[in-house]
Image (cartoon, rainbow over all chains, first blue to last red; front, top):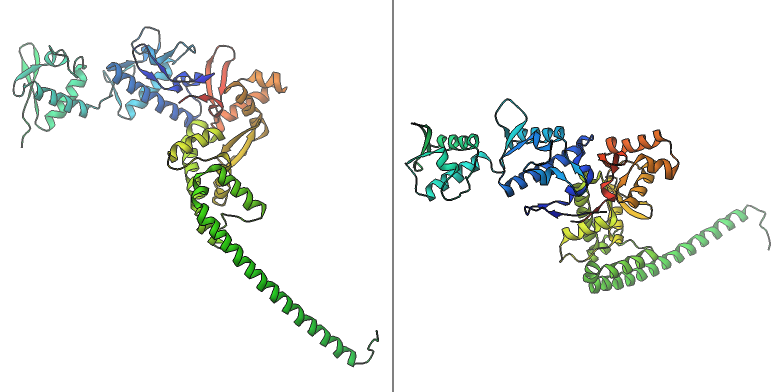
Amino acid sequence: MSLSTHTTPSGYLLPSIHSAPPFFTEQPNPTTQSTATEQWIRLILGYARHRKLFVLRVEDAEAAGSEWDEILRNERINRRILPDHLSNIIATMVSKNLASYEPAKQTRSALIYWRLPEEWAEVLYDWVVSIGQLNTILTFYDITDPPLESALTNIPIPLLRKAIAILGKTGRSQMIAIADGEGVRFLARSR
Amino acid sequence: MRRGVGLAAFDHQEQAERSYAELSSELSRTQVEHLHSQLDQFRTALAHFASTHRESIRSDPSFRYAFQQMCSSIGVDPLAGPRKGGWWAELLGLGDWQYELGVQIVDVCVSTREQNGGLIEMSELVRLVSKLRGVSGGGITEDDVVRSIKTLQPLGAGYQVVEIAGIKMVRSVVKALDEDQTTILAIARETGGRVVESDLIQRKGWTRNRARAALENMLLRDGLCWLDAQDNQAGRAYWVPSAMHWEI
């Protein structure tokens, strides 16, 4: 048999290692395992970017039907990643700051940083500038579900908060309490 | 012939020896001179050859092969270091060429080591090195790689060409392959990478313990294979990446 790349129904090009049966087993040799984990992380980040997926849960590996199925399973060779294995990969991603547990104090679900919070902060700021909403108050809903789809559509609130907090450090954002919750005002870059 | 029996005979003999010695040194001097002039001629001829064919030697693999065959048949080492005929390597630039190839081989071997545990198939190595050299580097052959690996030997990095079931492989980690491992690698070559205990028991007559120990050693100690714990038939299969057919 020959190991080749494969394009999924959603249009993502899987690397050839994804068709190698042992890729779906946690490797007992630590050196081999770290190579495999690196490949998995690259795959997860790439696929998340492709599908704009933000959250990966250990339970995504438990049963078929998750939005991650295309990478967590390979029906062509009848293999799937096991929940414990996925849990370890997520832990490695968190330790490398490529993901963070959300909510905190549990290890079953994590935000995947295919863009780092710092990068999201810049994307957010550029978007606000581009729609001319500096100095006005926006609700989180205005950002996550804008009338015109943006890069930030569906961004999880915890990640949005991080991005806003990063902008706050340079005086470019300000959290404001409003009648039905929280709002945020973006300010021009101070000279 | 009259034999001297008196004291004078000693003088006589001594004198004769002296004359012989003089004659012999005279002879060898002319021989050496002769050799020198021959060598000079040879050197000029080679220099001429080198300057005319230098480019072809660097860029044309089949020409290079023929040239190296010629060199080895007359006992000349085109790579000899500065102490023994450096002018030759210098003229050809073949030394640099070969060392450069050596560095590229090391590059490929080291960068793929984590995936294949330091064992790479020759054809794969040639492919990856060619890719690294790009189009302008000219083609390279297995023969060039073998030669370069020889030049790496003084470094003691343990690069070695081993033959497993008729397939040449390059080993870049200083670890001797034992006989059991060689057998396993040979089977992996036939199956496209997958080896299970029962392959070794049925085909090689090994005991289960021996098969398990050899496979586990390759997995845990050497990192030469990967584990697949979801194998439908055996439950536990070992995959040798250097024997798998990767389409990249």
